[in-house]
Length: 330
Image 1 (cartoon, rainbow, N blue to C red):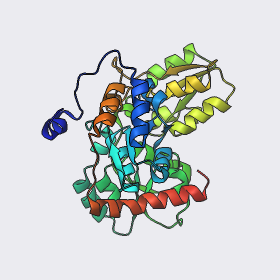
Image 2: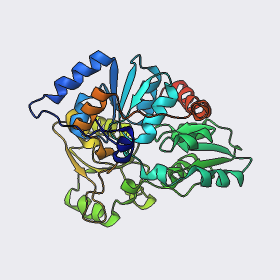
Image 3: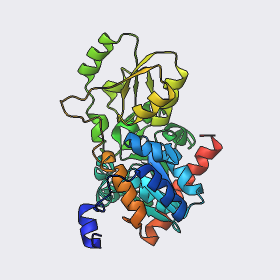
């Protein structure tokens, strides 16, 4: 097996896997042996979604991580999500199939710079989107997700001044929905920033009956065109409850697997990016594979750790989010 230094350099365990092994069966066996649970984000590859015990968006995954009875949480998602699970369940072992599964949005808000930014607004309450590092959560008053951001802002007194970070597009959408003035950090997700308004317009012309649905991390010009804007869970529910037969989907394409499973007779078209690459696939989310997940569970590595002082500080704003969400029935 790789040394720890090698593991940190590569991010994952590299080991020969017998090609005749049924990985689904092996993973199920290991889960029972180790009392492990697999939590997967909607943006993971279909095989991982199909083996997961729970599939969801950031809010749902946080709720599951907080209440699970398992000893081991295998987090098929990105680094900040595994950190959130560790913060909520510090006594549990949290594994991430590939430590290099990071996040462009989390990277766009270095904690030392955010600290200086926050100091400029001493009378402001800090709401951070869950897509950020544990250190950033530790500097926050409340954490939010795209499912509950609007409701969390609305739950605060109207005269409360607010800093919102790190996603400027989500922040601008929340400000518009709530009519509140928010001081925004200038961060963004590379997947949601790259959708092309022109190409979506042409696609809508070719599919005049399709509903165009978008995640609030998209730019305002794209959101203005949308028939519905919502979190990944919100988008999934909309496709189930709406009578349309076709949907153009502006978010990471991994969610389409669940949309197709829930709506076998409907058609889902990924919204096109403004270049020729597969940029509506998050390269970080897609670093996790079924093979890496199997090896991670088998070897109990790579493990995600968070310093004890950060766990204590970051836990408060996450718990505040979970309390507000529970009260609102989210």
